[in-house]
Length: 219
Image (cartoon, rainbow, N blue to C red; front, side, top):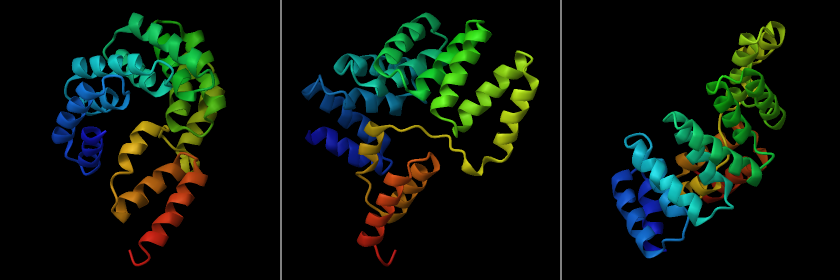
């Protein structure tokens, strides 16, 4: 795991090009480890979507039962208009994680892109049931409902967005959070705790803050 851990340390401190080289070497040495292609995909997604798609496709073959790589694969397939492939990946994701709010959000986006507005609303409602305080879910469902003439319900959701103090827009990602744990400065740890609390994970956010205070009492 030496190359992989070096890559996580470099990436956590924002040396992304160097981290990418380390993850590629780690993948060559441990081709069945899901983290190395997964991390490559996240780094590549902003500049080389084709390579990122290939990386996420490799990640899901490394650990087919791990939902998070399927989430990232679905996202990039939707972003690159590969709707048939996205549909296949989403079906697999929903089989693995039938109570995953992010999966239902992606399913709503796919159904909308396919022209199935009623189905998109159905998926959006299910996502909202599972993540009632997620800003992206509320925003998407409000737009879908408005287009389907459900004006009052859409207005109520938009009102929640305008009073957004209790809302969050992040999703849990245990793989990415493992990488971010390699960054040890107190300000980064405080930011991670803030993000956890914002998305409703008070238990882990407060635990991280307590650890931070114990480690850095004068920070």
